[in-house]
Length: 106
Image 1 (cartoon, helix red, strand yellow):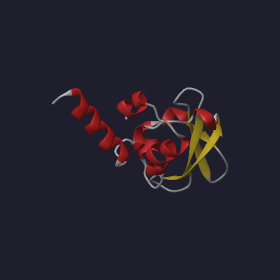
Image 2 (tube, rainbow, N blue to C red; image 1 turned 60 degrees about the horizontal axis):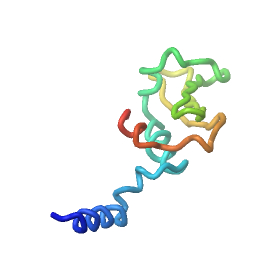
Image 3 (cartoon, rainbow, N blue to C red; image 1 turned 90 degrees about the horizontal axis):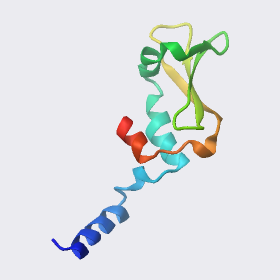
């Protein structure tokens, strides 16, 4: 294949939506990182050192990646297993974007 064909193929892939997950936006971050954790127990099992008491019914797990993006998952406190109920952005919403290095880490 020559260079023109390769560029054409890459453009077609980009236009059909395959590349939408690699565009660094807040919406992509929410869809790929935050929403999939709702209803699971992955965060409580793998991040016990991040757990703090949020209120009488919930724990909070504070995260900060990518740099400048601070968000948290809220889980139930009274029942087992601990399940993620919701997420919140604490600060740095403008930094909460997926980058290619973030996708590689997942």
